[in-house]
Each structure stands twice: as C-alpha cells, then as structure tokens.
Length: 121
Image (cartoon, rainbow, N blue to C red; front, side, top):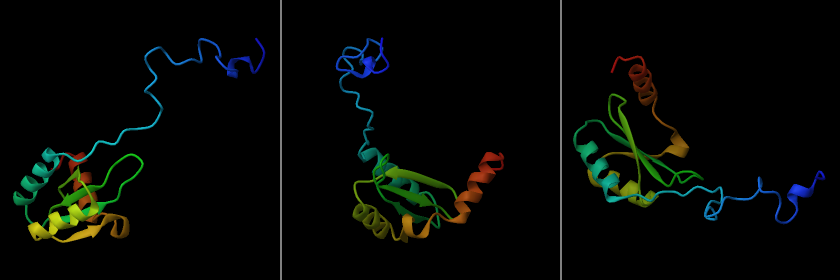
C-alpha cells in the first residue's frame, strides 16, 4: 500500500466509519434549557440569602447559563433560554444580575469551592 492510498476515495477498512454511524460528525449537541432548570433556579433563590446572578454567554459547548451565588459563596449554574430571560429572572426575584464575561465570578465562590474541596463545607 502506498503512502497516500488510505486517503483516496473509499480508503481502507480501518479509515471508514462503522455502519450505522453516519450521524456522528464530531460536533457537539447543546442541550436547551428546560422547565426543570427554571424550577431549580427558583427553588435555589428562595432558599438562600444574599444571592447574585451572573449571566454567562453562550459558548461552543454550552448555551446561555445563569450562575447564582449566595452570600457564603455556595453556587449553582443552570442553562437558561436567553440572556434577557436570565436578567428578567433576577429582576423578578429582586437580586442583582451581572454579565459574567464582563465582571467575572466573585471571589467568595472560589473560596467556597476551596473550602468544599478541603472538606470544610
């Protein structure tokens, strides 16, 4: 077999996709926000104090997400339908909302992650 023979049309058996695998293209599928995501965010906000919202933009891997951080640094993140939806959600609950791409995430969240990893939380 020559050096470039395997790249020609048809190629060798090693280079072909397995039968029935035509849907795999190497790209990822982004899951949309669901009602369970909204329900989780609602429950989380009412059970904690000092909550702030950080709206994270869509990326190649994730859709728009809303990161909620409580006064002690505890946090949760869920997919949301849109940036507008996330800011409206925060306004409805009377909590401040920020664009995470602009302001980043709060230090108290990183400290909470460190304490949790060390077994202190």
